[in-house]
Image (cartoon, rainbow, N blue to C red):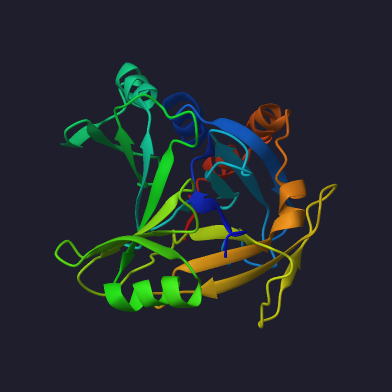
Length: 285
């Protein structure tokens, strides 16, 4: 399983402007690429929607060696309901803490030197107030589970993740595909997992020669590589995407025009204005 890599987590965003500000100005991430699509994704990348949407990849570096965020924006959706499935992303960056304070963005110190910041839409980020590491500063993604042992068995026995830590008392476990990769933390929520309508998806790459028994879906991006993906679900219904590594490395190359493409798309987005003129609200998912 050594060839598998943690790639990104997919967030649905309703306010693209404020979201871009949070990732760029507060977290200090860069836009790696931005793409616009006229119709829904065959693998439901943007959720169960058929309309126009966009995908923006942001991070501290390319997905070859960084864990990044995929921000999906559906033009007609103005609100998503959070569940208890996504519990947060933890990263190391004293600069992000400083940025938040300068911006007046709400911070809550939940432990010595660890601050909670909330991205637009309610997604939690935990910022460790230490010097940003030279390697990827994103440490872990935390997902809620209903039965810790059942989930650990799925992720370790079936998906081949290494168990780094397991704490029965705190009902949590830390797993991953490599020592220098972003880890997956599973934490019991003490009941059923509710995915709301804002449910996300975590993505990994796998080598072309790995045997996958279920059908693959080919995803086309205009002017870029076609990748093959498979979508799985763990015992609590968390969506997991495995993508062919070789084609994805080509697809995920950093686009130096990413910032401009995002800014141009936001400037051209008249959906809020149209809904306001019609005295209507965007749909709540």
